[in-house]
Amino acid sequence: MAAEKKKLGRRNFLATAAGAALAMPLARAGGLKAGPAGKKIRVALVGTGTRGINLWGKDLLERYGDILEMVGLCDINPGRLEFGKKYMGAGCQTFTDFDTMVRQTRPDRVIVTTMDCFHAKYICRAMELGCDVITEKPLATDEKMCQDILDTERRTGRKVTVTFNYRYNPEAEEIKKILASGEIGQLTSVDYNYYLDTDHGASYFRRWHGFKQFSGSLLVHKATHHFDLLNWWINAEPVEVCACGELRKYGWNSPFRGTNCRTCQHTDKCEFYWDITKDKYSMDLYVAQENYDGYLRDACLFRKKINIWDTMAAQVSYHNEVMLSYSLNAFMPYEGYRVGFNGTRGRLDARVYHNQPWKVDRLADFRVATLFGETRTFTISERGGSGHWGSDARMQDMIFRDSVPDPLGQAAGSRQGAMSILIGIAARRSIENRRPFKVEELVKI
Image (cartoon, rainbow, N blue to C red; front, side, top):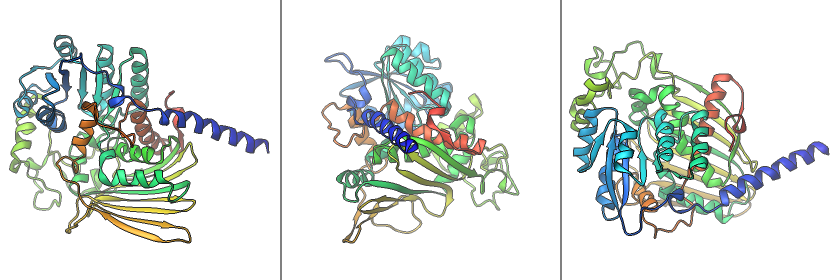
């Protein structure tokens, strides 16, 4: 009886603490402070890779030029920096030193789109210099960086927005609405299987993402999207993670390898050969700038030094006693995911199609089945618009247009960013140490 009361007490405590935090309404765009009244928001960007110069560069200037001004660009690679400025059509100054940029241009908000392992460095420094921050996922790549961000935000009073564009996908919104309606009752467990194909999945192993020290592994870089969706869908926070992972296809698994595709002697045998010279954009953004930092965009995905996994599975327990069974595979013949939610009154299944080798005339299939009742099925068609089915633009509207409502609670701040990466970090630690990890072992929130 005493043990039962102790368990119940802890359950209620966690439910109260996490529930209150999740129920707290976020200020617009994660609590970002607006620019001076009547003036454009001053924005600076650090990191001029493809995500930076497109979504947070060219697209931003084209869609929001009426309310914001790009005042500075920063990157450690001066060649890529200048190409990015020209590609974006920006008229601002460029810098290779972050502090100098912020002090000279005095931005209201800094957008961070660097290599993952440097997110925390620039997020914290921007807040210390008086700026609010918009950062690409993941928030950070290890627990110390995560703690530094949370502590700096608390100390400086500045705010961080994490750009979880996946929350704005039409199928994600539909799942959120069904679960919130109570149609399948109280949630008990979730089955979530994500598939990356041999194009998208392989691309991570060609790039810097193939090294844990840069990306935190796909459990952090990629799966932060998936874990954030789960946290948001079920309105809960993770307690404990147990995981396993293997490198089964890429890295050391091939009998042959080279430095990069352009110089490889095995192109006639390699099923993953990619001719970057046929992609002018990649040639201009990456190949033309190799002399500055030596970064190879078409690096061999069979390098023996690759230390992330391509086959992963995790079990996650949440504060509300929901259990998650998750898997991520990075060399499948098609891309997308299956997710199933088990409730006390029924089950919700969703099959989401992304890149398919066959023609699919819809984005997702749904099935909602109630216990001893009826089953209904329906499909969702692709929503118009570029950038992840129009989700990027809707997310940016939420961040920059004060008039956009947020009935589903899609805006995400540092706490949501932390909770998503902490599942991946705990999973990575679990694989490395061969034991479960509790979130409270990693950070203090």
